[in-house]
Image 1: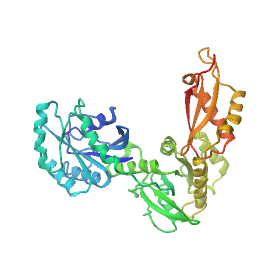
Image 2 (image 1 turned 90 degrees about the horizontal axis):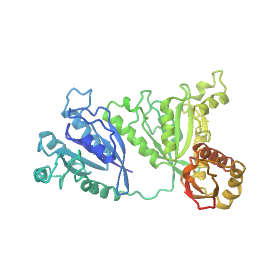
Image 3 (image 1 turned 90 degrees about the vertical axis):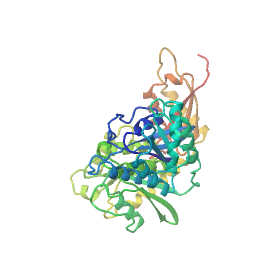
Image 4 (image 1 turned 135 degrees about the vertical axis):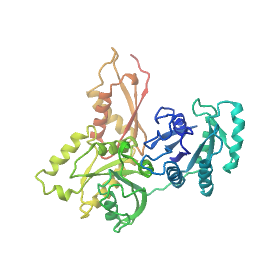
Length: 436
């Protein structure tokens, strides 16, 4: 998905527009400049086209030079990172010196800019929007983010540019290395590449970019995506941290398999679980790499007990393989590549329909779903309708009544029958007319 950044000086309605586009109250909206303290991002959609949307606040709280330095930082980062930039100005105030400064930076870039004149609540206000042609950024779009007036027009212009940005299909295996800051992601990347491709320090947050590197593994090219460490939103203090987080989310979106690096000396933390969940929601292959295992081996806890505790902390995710490694000594790091290759094969495999119905349906018939609301539930048929990621369709008489607990039972039975280690799977349930 493309990245769309909303930029502009404080108090022009950026957060209101952000909320309008994603259709929920996500950003805090107040008339006081600088309310957008945490940098916000979400996934937006218009006319069937999805994209990442970033709301850049007008003020960085720790900045001494309150306006110019903060605005310049936000705009320059947006120029560097975004595929399309929404430049928001205030139709009531007219062009200000800060608007002109931002406009100059945007003109000097090669990025697509959509100029939005906010707070145009009626046709009369639209006439004043023509003043903004002076910025040299093309046609201004007069809108009202508050009531949604004319917002569809400028969104059409945004997605047109995104639709033209299509990458050629890349058949190479793509592995994203993700995790909290300072768990050893860059050290792992360097070990796999056999050279110091990434800057490695003991300072959390050193890696600001999602950087692609290509390794050759027994003659096969594999793309490694090393990402910045994900942090809780409350810990994102500066704009650059926001873009690091967005880049990591985008890396997960475009990878085949994600290696979630966990610091074994610290155990599984809440943030680790959030990263793992993000990979699972994206339906990518998952591997947990317990790094710094050389330090744990000196402890009294056995590997089996340690890994058992990890699985206890991750209910319903016992299908995720755990590999103990040391990125520093390169212990077992190539096993990660082997496991990732195996997972990708599983993600691409289609299970024949006759096998599913002969074997899985037989298991489900031995333990049928419970009756719900005095109705017997009967599953008639199952087929795999998609790969990468695997998607299975079940046909039954009352799909809306099937209990969640039984759905989890169905997944466990399917995993018993077929090797789906490291592969998140999805089910859909469809109506099948049967006699009551």
